[in-house]
Image (tube, rainbow, N blue to C red; front, side, top):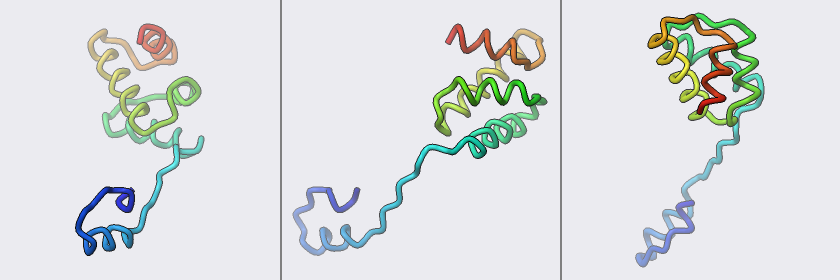
Length: 96
């Protein structure tokens, strides 16, 4: 929070107190599943609902974790020459 900063200058301190503060909550289930689908679409990955459900229920509920899981899935699927499936997701999450 800007207002919590220890600032010597009174003018700057008063300006920092007027800055609006917004906190971001973790995504709800619908948004989280949508993020996974979007991150997959960004990488031109074709996935089905079973993969989305599997990931959504087993990874940390954060934007960064969703992106990291999709990146890992895509990288490993390409490296192994395998399609992105629930089985591949389970393998990768088990070994992560």
